[in-house]
Image 1 (cartoon, rainbow, N blue to C red):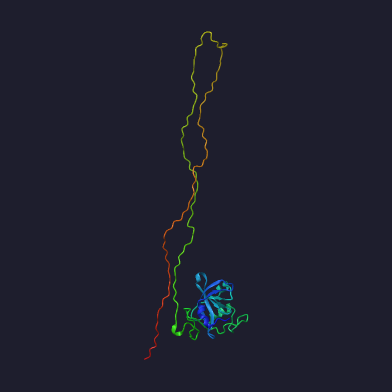
Image 2: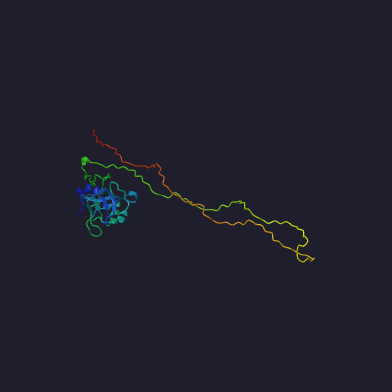
Length: 264
């Protein structure tokens, strides 16, 4: 069912979804068919952070419960020609849009479905009072023209990022240690005892003889064992601090310009 002029206000507040139900964004501006006065195109914010205003035709679109469903995929709409949504589309800009969406100037698209006919389209920049090129208002009324003012709101959150790393690394330190150890050694002395009469000393022969007596001492012996002395680990804790962030925010203001027709 064709979206009519009576649905403009509902259209302005609608959320645009593609044919699969994926959300494209909210309607920014509405463009009217100059011949019929019915809505023919809308623009929707797309691109990163909604910085691009993309044109979408309303042919075969449906408006229901605040959702404007268009017969295109989300990626296809995002790749549409990047055209500034000024107050009037030039002939060249219209040609690019009609070619991309496979619409022609005769009132049919490439598959033979009826389209919007006359391509002379216009829109009010504030997106509230929509008009045709003849200046006829279709918003709240010519005597009750309104515009919507917008402002940016700052929404500050946090994200978790890695700022560094802490490592535990072992290395070997060598130092000298002196330990006192008691040691023993054997010493000797010559003992002479006289032989008295009647004492049996064995057969007495003249000649050379030799007696060997071992002499001992203790010497320090060093051995080392590796033993665990302590465990060292890293324990993390969260510390909360207050940090100020500064950004620019913009808002719209109204300038009243009075055009007076004074005749002498």
